[in-house]
Amino acid sequence: MTGALIAAAVLVTCTAFGLVRRRRDGVLRAPRSGGAMRLDADDLGAALGERATLLQFSSAFCAPCRATRRVLDDVAGMVDGVAHIEIDAESRLDLVRRLEIVRTPTSLVLDAAGQVVQRASGQPRKAEVIAALGAAIRS
Image (cartoon, rainbow, N blue to C red; front, side, top):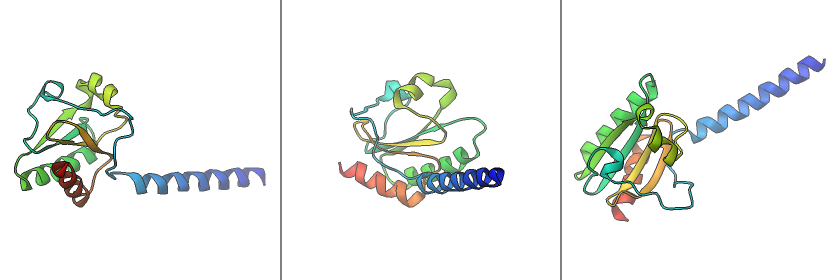
């Protein structure tokens, strides 16, 4: 009887965790850190976009990273002055630690000055990236 109760509790806990994770995965939101995070071309190893930059942290064997790359490339191609930069998280651990990247893919939306305005862990949806990009360009 005790084993059945423990199994049921574990099942309920895991299901709740899975539902919360699915709901939050890939959703763009404002960065958590209290201080404003600004990046420049020296940090990224590439030039920022004139209007905004879509920054993606990936790893070699990450399947969602490939899908995220396609989404961000499509959005960057739709809007003039927007650059998409992809960084291998394993080769830039200094930047990963500084930005508190805990999983791949992680996407950041930067404004023209390199200020991080939105971030998402997981594969973001194209419509949300477009909306976040619009907000970054207006600011």
